[in-house]
Length: 454
Ligand code: ASP
Image 1 (spheres, helix red, strand yellow):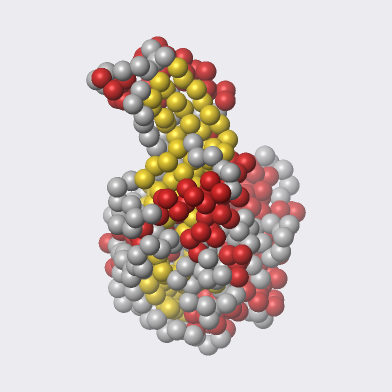
Image 2: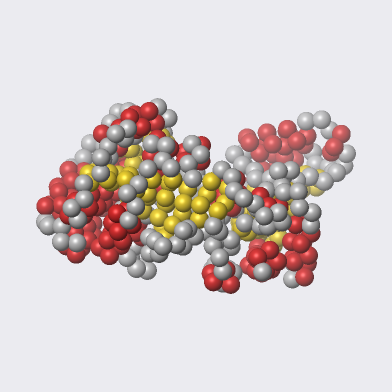
């Protein structure tokens, strides 16, 4: 069985919903269909989830919600009318929204907001199930309540209670036809609706794929495949090949460095269960997309992708004879921990320690406090914070045991006159990263793409 998840752009209007139906019907193993809320129909449009957030906020302020209510209903009505699904489903969606709105004041703010946000996916799943049935297919809606998807943690940032896997797997142990399931939300033990972080329908799809031990988790979006570089920065890549297969490790490294196509957090359940993930395009269903799996055939000396992580800074701490001072590293990290600074990498010299940190963990307002704390604790000779850095990551299992990969990258950057301020490679050799000035980031990506892919 395949679990297929369709994102908001795949459900934005009736034409897109029809594509979803065709894709699912084209393969009888596509039986569990997870949907997002309708997304943007065009640039400048608003996603249903954002309309619902506005609706919830207006209701919480005690203001008139007619306009916001109408805007949400209108999105579903447009799809239902164009698909000729009749008025009943629209009436049901209106009733559902009214029931949810009636909870204002009875729930806490975050609970109410989640109740409204979840309406986007929930009603979309009901509508899509009706659309399948209208095509004469045996199809039903199933949701988190009846299948036991229990969430814990904060509203808007909830996580699955791992005990749910058993319940979910039992709920789907034996079902007929196609099931359409809403993404993005579940229920707390107390029976309140709770949502995953934004974009969380990917998480739902991944959880269900793990729970039913799917053969594949197909994640349908609006790109043909994952590209080896961001095509907005490296236009040549758009005409070139997408990545046919990559390993979970490669995906994780690229996602870490900012590849936008997938969210590595979202796929953790599928990765842990070793379910292959297939990123595909709803608009080009004939394209095989990118398959992400545990292992793949690797050509030695090849790179799978190059990513750039902007907004980094380098905190440098220098102290003569640092290497002989037992506990220096521990105290430095403890100081950062006490200041709530999360670090990314920690390359070191003989008497200097660099700490690569994302800007958001060391904003300028916090810098002098953090430096003062380090000064008190470690009495360094010198400290500095270098900002506007980009970490360029070159990733590929094929780099293992291949001499000269880093040399090629450095030569390409040198030829462009790009200075390297730090290099880091873990001994698994699946990636290396190079710190450069952010102003050089695009130029560096283009040079590295030409070196490794042309
Ligand atoms: N509709 C939700 C959002 O816009 C969840 C999702 O689409 O995955 O964030």
